[in-house]
Length: 77
Image (tube, rainbow, N blue to C red; front, side, top):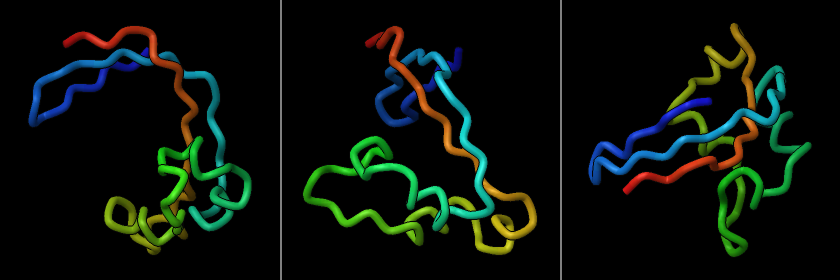
C-alpha cells in the first residue's frame, strides 16, 4: 500500500500495488500499455518524452524505469 498526498489540496489517497513493470526506458514501457491505463485522457497524445520532466534520459539509460499498476483502496478528502 502507498499513501499519496496532493500537496496543493492536501487530499490523500491510498492505493494497493497490483503490478510492477520494469523496462529499459519509457519508450519501451509506452509500447506495452494503452494511454488510459497510464493516466492520459482519451483525447491526449501519449508521448514517452512527457516523463523526461521527472526522469531524464540519462537516468533511464542508467537505471531503467518501473511502471507501477495501482488500485485505489481509499480516497480520504
